[in-house]
Image (cartoon, rainbow, N blue to C red; front, side, top):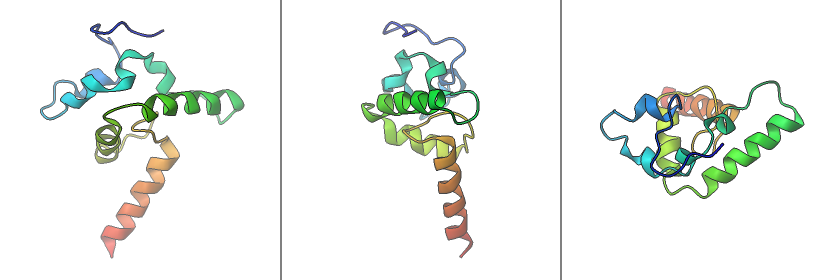
Length: 104
């Protein structure tokens, strides 16, 4: 269920950081008016969850603030959901690589 422009997404992940300074970018996010459940596939990797992930990433692909979203997800080590066009495994691998690079 999409949310009409201007409405608040009660209970969505956006409300977690919407009050933090410097996080106003979320208001311009393409996902702000989509069903939040789209971005949090549930269950093991199945054809259904993989399709849901592709659909969520398609929203990210048209998002004007995808980089800010991805940066926030990486900085706060989000372990669930699709953020900034990346899935859980993609972010985990990127964080691991980043930590390895920092340790050198």
